Image 1 (cartoon, protein in one colour):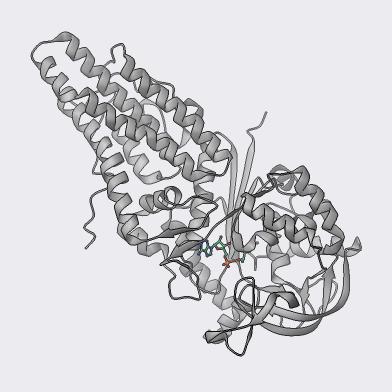
Image 2 (cartoon, rainbow, N blue to C red):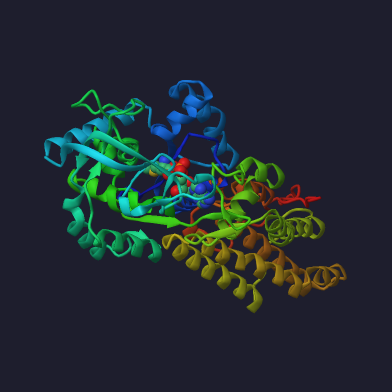
Length: 529
Ligand code: ME8
């Protein structure tokens, strides 16, 4: 049996501008899930990338006085790829929609739908929002206010709309209403969380109109193969990145192995595209539909949605430079409930950094290594028989693993970290309760039972840290690698990346004689003034 595959994606982001922590957020959560699934032994494929076509990018390039291709080439190299390194993303691929592999797959896909009669030629006359690259129905526009006075805006997201009339090709989306409703019924977990599912089901229940799939008034896009005067509408080619990146139309064996995707992670702004238009396109092509679309909420700064167009966009670099990439990843995974909106602030990041990372986890790691150094010369002793306190620690790890696994399956990474953090708290409580320094004094005075007890305590703590290094590796890859080395686990057990979640609670993996060396502080205190 080959290892099961887990194919997870982020949206592909528009390269009209630099990334901010909203993009960093989606990518971080995707990365935590990808790393966790790798630690289960699954064949993970984690895809992210950029959406390079559309009028938003075109206009930005024009305003900068460069060609759109030059604009995207520059931003991808100077901003978007570096962002992935900044947050320590472990994506397996990065797709750009200007790549030939994408254009070929897009053209093959729509050629197939055109030949199947799912496409017709018509005229579009209505509203278009360049901000959200979306056609907006007459009932969904209103008069703008403030800066937008004198313009019409979309009620969906407040972006300005323009009236366009152009010859277009249309996809018979309206044919799919019942099939989609039946599909949502048969697959209650397809769109999550419940708020997103309700939005989607009620939208489809009201009826669907056919969708314009081409544009004919500018030429920054992928050409429609059967009509040179048209390019594809940006969304209906962008969605196809999820299949063109894994071999659609080019490497059928690879495509069959990876498709359908297990999970599309998206922000709630784009759930309709992913849960209505995308499955309908796939159904029309006779292709399997992804297993799950999970929509997360907004990161709010000062109570407002952060966005590229507002001045409140924070770049991931700004946080990573102060706190490091591990703390960045930890904060966004732990502090926000995935699926809900959540406010962030520098004060909150600093408070969690010190309370949870520096004092809670980092201090535990350094105390344990220091005690093994002080009482046993940095060499792990053989453990004596454990008692009730040790059994509680082991049971706690077993429970944490089970709860974290369930949380990962439910796409609740915040709950997974909270479950693992119970082990941090248990171990800190265990140190206080067992007071190894007192036991060490008795052992030094020649009490043999105390010497054995001390050994048991130290080994229990080292094993507990070993478990934490594995369980927290998906969230904090750097600090856990330092901890792993400090525990001598690389030599004694093997590379951290090869450890399996299923083995974490198996005690006794660090043999007597393992050299434990105190590392630099995992999370040094930071002067936030
Ligand atoms: O929509 N909070 O690209 P985009 C949390 N190209 N997440 C946020 C956020 C915020 N304040 N702001 C943005 C597009 N995001 C299309 C996608 S996919 C085939 C095409 C995240 O650059 C969130 O994931 O506008 C949201 O869905 C995405 O960025 C939108 O990125």
